[in-house]
Length: 200
Image 1: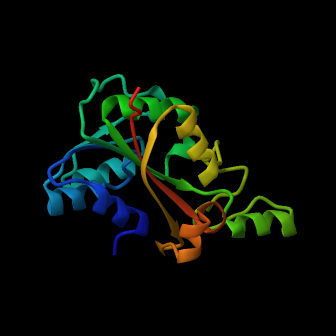
Image 2 (image 1 turned 60 degrees about the vertical axis):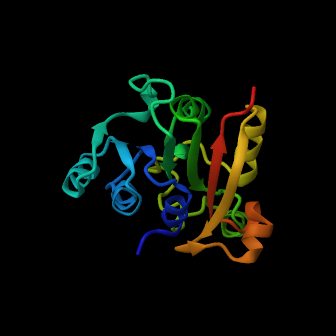
Image 3 (image 1 turned 30 degrees about the vertical axis):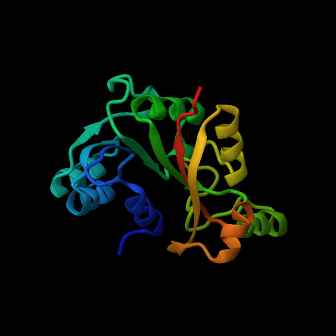
């Protein structure tokens, strides 16, 4: 069973698209897209185990540190750039967003929503940084260096003049309840955005 956010991304990707998957992990998404939708493209990954898993799945993968940018890809090299659960681990997520929309006209991004109500309650009542399924690390060993919220990302897109084509939320292992769609910043555990270049 595919993770809920990956299933939604799968539904958003057009047939036969050229896709670049940043921080592709074990290649699950690209492999599924290639099989079901005839998608072609590459995954970028830095973890050796992830690279090995990609190769075993027949996924084209490049070993690359995302903090170094995407200068090895030309403008409009792809139809779509995807990044799942990696934006918060980058030194400059804002610059990566620019790079993603240079390489493709549209991108899909998912990240943990730090404003999720369980995280708020945990921090407010217990006084400790939350540890959860979407934020599984302790404060001292987490790879996440830029924790943000659903609202934070929307503001960043507006500041950059980008178009939010679609947005959704995930809660745990499934797509969000109606409450999370109505109040995504409070009830959405995972933020899922489909973003396009602005008209300017």
